[in-house]
Length: 252
Image (cartoon, rainbow, N blue to C red; front, top):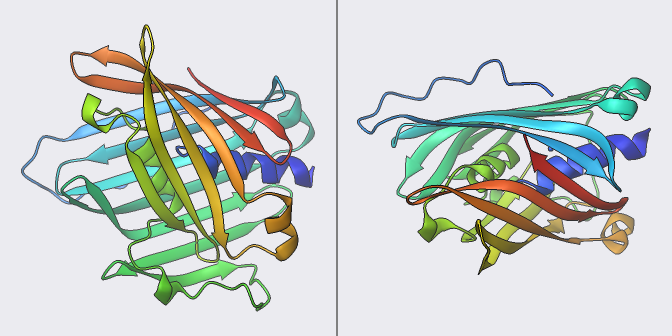
């Protein structure tokens, strides 16, 4: 059961890119002058061909600010055995083509209960709450060294939202969740009959135990984009490696 929870959360982070219910609310962004756009999607998650969960997210961007929220939860046979749910939300400013987070919260319920709350000041994360506390260790990440990083929800929103052709497979961000630093990147667009595919990677950078880093720290994945408009492309599928085997996320 612990393996199931870790897999669901890891899939959520990795896809985020880069895991069945629609989201209920998203915090309202600050009023701006640009037209507001909303992205919303639900992905079914399969591990070794077996449906294990679902990822849903909603994001709102008005050109000056953004807000995003998402959740992943166990479903199907796995959901009948163990109930796991992971909720996250973030909001911040839009600076050109970048999202600059201002606040982030996440909460995991089920086999284990975890909660994280962060604010960002001058692009530097400020950890307000991380429970249960992680024992101090030599691999701890000092939040002050994570300037320019974004929270996991912001990273996932940026990776999974609809994009124009120029932004397909062009994405790279560093993430910080309050204890661990990682990175998501997309590159190498390859044309298909319906759009593009590209190669991606989720990399653990610091904050994991030596055993976890030795087990696996590089998680490659493939993203499939379908064309949905004259200059608009949408993520329809993500195939990725996890420590528990090959996983797939399919958009509903």
